[in-house]
Length: 79
Image (cartoon, rainbow, N blue to C red):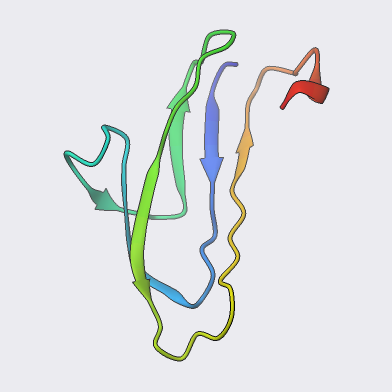
């Protein structure tokens, strides 16, 4: 996958978000997206995301990230 990017508009209940791509050794402010670059077949990337959950939050805070790429996926059923 070429030009892979992860997008994640965090829920309003989560503030001061930071992320790590090196297992938590370093953290940077989350701005809503991260350029993954080129990923070879079968390659995985782990991104840790942390933040402060509002004390006003009720129930489960749900979040969904989206990954896009300039390369079409020949088998979208295995994602």
